Length: 409
Image (cartoon, rainbow, N blue to C red):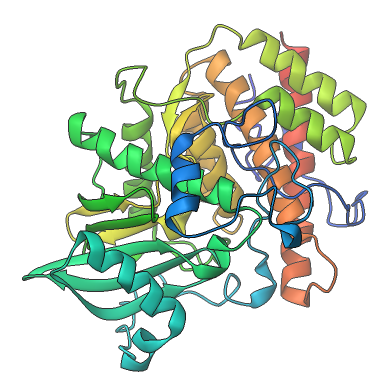
């Protein structure tokens, strides 16, 4: 057995699984397709198969892809480029563990920007009583505005104008519709974890109004420099595992990741060698009859709130059926500075036996490949280059664990 195959603390009996040094064979930046995201279903001609996407495009007054010359040719199944970490926000030092989060500053002028006013116009259509108080986020994809309906605190989430006019609007709208569908499914089938309650939604204009849960994010960065406290990590892992072990009706959610396609993509751009791809396909072959697991799909610390009543999971755009251990693989990839947390995750992932271990390893390799493509970009600063070296070390460790797993089958 190698129960700590992905643990960064090797022992004398596991010398073959020691992590490599930072300088061991790190490949250079690769140019290729953007980091993977689940793909919206499309028809044979490349148009969105979901009629709600077409309705949303019409409701927002957008031209069809065939007439939008500025958008260029569309590729069926194209993926949205992930937000690059070069803006500095993803690598900002987080709040220290145990330190109370700073009070959010309210900037009334932020409510008057054209983007926010356009978003508020969409919110007022479905919630006339909504009173905006504060802009929580104004990004290239989403705008989040905190406010109240009567005395109830709520948060309105809308597609940003840049996203509405983007050539990737079809995929963004499909993800938005999926998140709304997830919240509505949770109304009918209550999950065993805490999440914001759905208040209202408008599919056509991509507007979502949810309960605002008091609490602070477990981290404000994708890869936090300082992990949460051990007690907070245990609470977050408990919440994730509780969700993963829940068995809702199988027709409520859909599979969200094509594993064979992802392996082929990373193999085609050189991130996976022939042997790596063969090892992963070998493990997948053995997992052909393994039951899928309901996962959040984007279990980053920034998508988890630490509320007085316990952890709260937000941003459900990628929720669906995955191979077991996908959420744990995401958490393992971002907790590079917490050896104890990684050891707990590895033990949890392998507690279900050989199949659960193999599924976790497949998920871990693919998640690390995505993170490398996200961060290994030209012009990275020194702090980001240190993170890139860690990701390559983690990927080499995961590859060796996969190779060892294949050898035991």
